[in-house]
Length: 594
Image 1 (cartoon, rainbow, N blue to C red):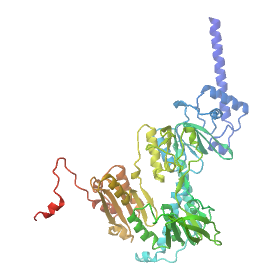
Image 2 (image 1 turned 30 degrees about the horizontal axis):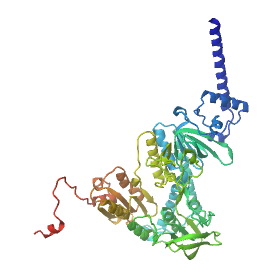
Image 3 (image 1 turned 90 degrees about the horizontal axis):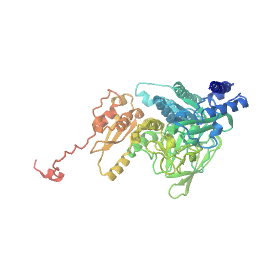
Image 4 (image 1 turned 60 degrees about the horizontal axis):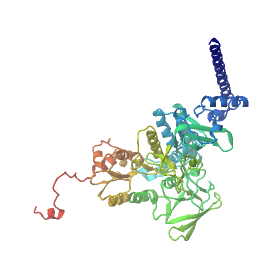
């Protein structure tokens, strides 16, 4: 018995020594020197000997044969094992609770909410923190609009003279304006990154693809020092979008370009053709005309600004198009665009009738901006590994809860998709709202975002904003569902603050159900319209009726009183009392004696 006890103690000591040796070797391997790039991403165990690496891999794998060990700044030594096929991981062994692929506004918003909910979170980003919005979209374009808007205002001598202001000649430095935009983008990008690092979000650099619905591999082409694999209980796709370039158009970034190139403002063409008259096209027409360019819109449908409410579009044309050096061609396609040379050779644009498909004209301009919308950036995700695929346009199909739909039409467990990649509403703040919604669903609190409550804005001078439906869409809905539409309008000309700034051009318009007061849509064009829309959008989000908004109090004198007047003028049918007798027809009432 004593001999057996001694043997057991000896065996236990050997086992402990072996485990301690494995742990020491693992620590030595992880303490090896690493380059700055290695520390920043998650590459391999640089500097460790092959024998130490092999020993560490074997030791760690034997200690936990699932996929749990978290090694930020290093490739998991079991990554070779994972690459042999899909991994089934225990919930307790994931590297993260949530892995977000892409760090635009949507991915950033999802990460912030995830950490707030106590979820261990990482982001995999293959390009720039902040995505399109911060680096090539919303943010730098607002800097250009701010600078060009000031130039336009200071060049409007009659407007300033009416307020007793006299100015001399106004000039600007093109490079200075461009630098303002690029510096703003850089600052915001840094702020976003710092906000994530400060709350403990790990940022991995690389292009991501699925190994299975819990495992993501990432890396950069031609870079052996960047890459690895991570596991997460839940994965959110937030890869965003890129500019859409129609067939027959070749981009050179100089004379034929997208918004990505235009934001650099490398030169100011005398005559710019803009293909597309949506938000992007309108905003750049505002910038270019303020800086002295002439603009021609090329629009495929029969009217410019086709997505706008018809009445708002007519007023926008009167304020944003007609008084400026802008003309337009509608009902035509730019079927072929030949690049030019700045200041030497013009750009040739072949115009084809949208209906007959016959070539009707060839335009020669100095430059051509392609503003025909955006397409999802979803290639290379290896969606087939999780039993999913994109639709014919490249969007990832999702449920109302942002769950990715598989080829069988059922949700793929633990995989979500938000923002431009799913195509539900291609706006930065919509992506952020979807990210928050996805996290709520991950936490087991069912949540569905009401996309009709998401506001949108065009930052021209004056601005245009809206939430919900156009009047035309509302009347079509009313026809189908058998209810009456109410419409109420008010003008900026009746607002003291707008008149004080001599900015009375503009109107607000509310569309609602006459029977219930449900708000179907609100449109605003005028000074600071983009800031004013949120009272209406939040009302839609919280299911307030137009009657509820009549009791809101607005400071005087402010532009917000435009909406105050709007809501107070709305008239809703009185509620029908249960069991009440039907009112006599209008004809009988009219025939009654006075």
